[in-house]
Image (cartoon, rainbow, N blue to C red):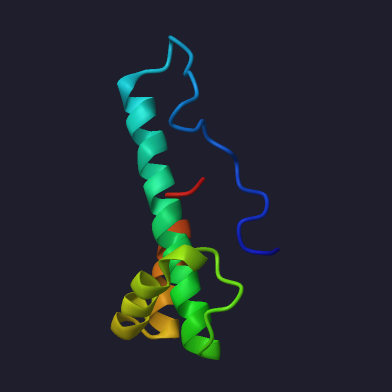
Length: 92
């Protein structure tokens, strides 16, 4: 399965939520969105660290930040952090 495929879509920031949606649900959705952003950055860092090219990355507009992550974590460390995010059910 390719990265990012099959993920559930959550409401965008401008989209109206059901009036019955609790603050806890909103916070949970925001946390999942933030974790997905972090995972996509780690994925890009992992991919860039393996190929030393920044082509075909998810966050192509954030190349400098991805480079910083690549300098901090090697590809295996990035992969471990991604796996931890899924293992802890943060993205279910």
